[in-house]
Image 1 (cartoon, one colour):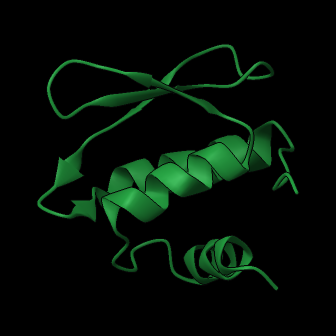
Image 2: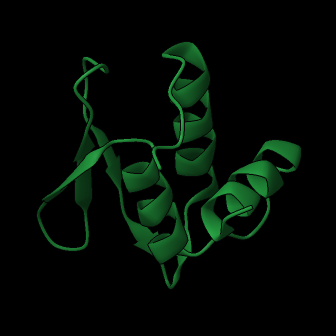
Length: 84
């Protein structure tokens, strides 16, 4: 089991768990999102099967909890899978 898979399972079990901004970005990429720089500390993630862009920004070194929940909801809604 990979580190990304373990992270995803941990977040499914507890979406409010502390997650680093870097790990959240890696999780986006693992699900097939492409990173596009935004303004300032914001980073945009685009997926070919998702009709909108997800934007994340850090709170210190951590991810903002609502952004984690939003990614989990998009993964479920669009039936995305971690790419090998």
